[in-house]
Image (tube, rainbow, N blue to C red; front, side, top):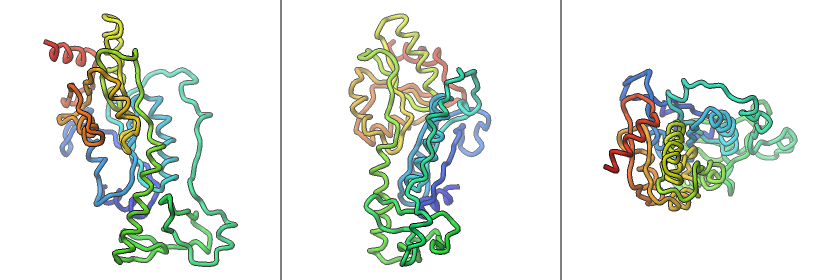
Length: 300
């Protein structure tokens, strides 16, 4: 529910929200796939708060971005959204034994107060203490010096419900400061294929697989014909995105929605206009044949 997302934002509650997209509106095609919730997830809830949107493109990415999402949620005490789709959620394939690196998994609980910190606390615990980073140190439940009650209203540091204008400015600014550091934790876009190719397919999420195969087929016909730029981090928009996109000679965005939501996000964030697009919104997953046929139509 959007109300719950907003509550997590103002109460600074770490939470990971997983969305396997399928066609709507309403029930739509409940067993089919689409990529049409990006802009909704970007703006879901009342007002503004920092969030991260991750969109895995493969089973391996789903694993690694999954534990990364939980770490980022704890680190910044804010909702993190994993944006999958029905195609990826239902997909299965055999993996090599070392495909999922369990040794790389880290657990980061962020800024936590220890029992020693709380034992020596001489004033009331400030759950929403104003800090330079925007992150207020948390106390795990159970310590008698760290008892607080939170709510969905604006609050002061203690917290108490507070509608004072200056307090509102300080608390909202504190929350939004987290977004600055969060840019360091969002995955950058990644390349596949030869550098300097004539055509760059741009995609996000599970369109990675069919787009990658389409690139392979194009390069089998003409060496250096195509490459691929894949986005698995969408919010905050990756700081390197503009530099990477401007390396491309011709860009075509491949995504599963009617309006071109990644295309819109790219234009809004960095003012970059792509050269073309291939969209699908019939509930069926992309196939390399579909991509190649649409490219041929555009060249005709």
